[in-house]
Image (cartoon, rainbow, N blue to C red; front, side):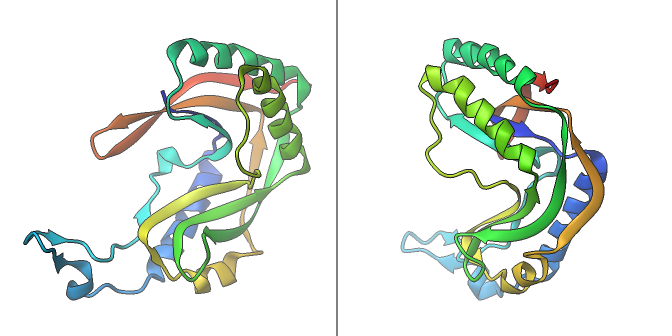
Length: 204
């Protein structure tokens, strides 16, 4: 099982994420027919450069921790139970929707994202990490709060978009965080479907 822990945006914030996504799409460089397709050595037409692939609205989320691609059913049950330890450790809070960026960089972007801020977010993430540590689950990279809005295998020039939204508030809608979820990403035709395994309510 492919599992992760996440927070999901409310409808008003999700609508603003879609607007941010559309701004990114509108600014992408046009792809010529020659760039879009090439004839391989095997005589097969393959894409040479592809446009952004939008993240579907129902899959937009803020990942608190990725848990792995090959989680067993037994391990998943242990994770489900351990995460309940986090509920009394953190209180509900609000996120500030500010900033945007790209991985690995704006000039050759393969992932475009929106950023959020909240002091309480680090506390929640720390609680999740400590709860799962006895199960041998450790974070392999620093936590960087972001919501992926688009991906590109070949890289795109998102410099203008990042320059405009890099430090700008992209939504004034309230994003209250009363809970977080354990999620499964299940393979399906053409991509993955995200399913809620368990929902956890903050009550410190």
